[in-house]
Image 1: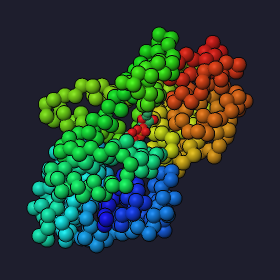
Image 2 (image 1 turned 180 degrees about the vertical axis):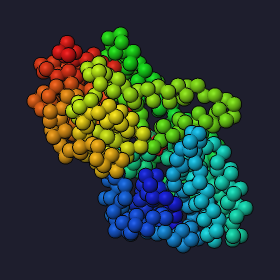
Image 3 (image 1 turned 60 degrees about the horizontal axis):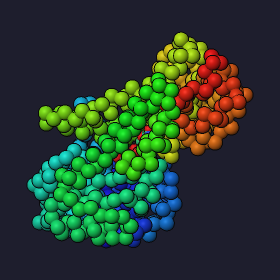
Image 4 (image 1 turned 120 degrees about the horizontal axis):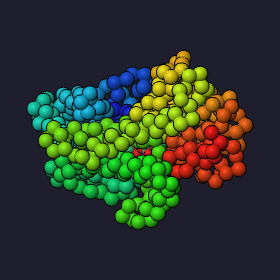
Length: 436
Ligand code: UGA
């Protein structure tokens, strides 16, 4: 099938490459010439495990261009995977989606289906349909379908090739058939709904996961107070299939480009319709507080951070990505710097992006050991494998004061039993607290 994809971010590029890997002829469109040139050489402009390899294997079916007219004019399906960033009031900014829709209206010369993959507020697809139909230059029938994305950064390729489900929201049976053909070779259950329900499935799913994390973080905070252990608690909860084992990891809150944006967007949508969605509002508030958890914990050990050597392990919002959006590091590091701390940081792929924000004030290290050298306290913001596998004896050997604040529960408490390391994690007892 001849397919065009608008936007080559996480959603657009991964979708395009995966569709090409199944034999469709895919043209990916982006406005950035430099990015397009890179992709033509089989190099992905985003860091995503497995993407470069699949791109190179699928090059026979892949094209990249800035010429949207040529890409859209005879495509049978046009996927929109551009960003819908958060506006100041929390609502979703649809400017990029609308721009692409306008270009499609000017370009299409055959009947086709426009597939909205970008996360858009409920009702947007209806608006897209009338906006597009009013502007069509050629006499063609264009249907709009909602096909929300459930991939996670870091596992985006696998999540797409082995999707938990494929949701197709259509108002026209024929459009549904076109999309079923697109996904014919994907091994995943297909759920066909009306467009508004499909749009809602996306928000309801993301916001439910965000809610689950905030809930477990609140339970973790209570565990610290009452002397219970969150790892045991969630293990005990997870065996109940109605609760499930996944997404029960407590920590310093959720970040990334999706949960923070999508919780705010749904909350905005509800209040705009005079229908407050209290659970989501609470999840947002809990998360904002949770991100400050490690700095608050640090105040137990040091009244202020002036001239303190602080080691920071992990800067990205989660492992497997170089993305810093809404990462806990972005809230905590500025506080430490403002307080006069000397911050040394390590992240295997996120340091370059962090450097763009803080080129001089932070010392970037190429190893965990270098970061820990002479540190008075260590903050763990991201559970990179390198951190999880790190020989914990080295915290004691390298740090001036071995105080480890772990925002991602990377280690078992037992591992610290025979050490002099103060190990303070989330929702668990502090090991060696008596040493401070
Ligand atoms: C999320 C969803 O998981 C995807 O299904 C969805 O398609 C995507 O948003 C999107 O809308 O595009 P993503 O933001 O890439 O994916 O990352 P997640 O793996 O969901 O993690 C988000 C945040 O939650 C991270 O900061 C992570 O550390 C945190 N998290 C996750 C926890 O704190 N605890 C957990 O148990 C799981």
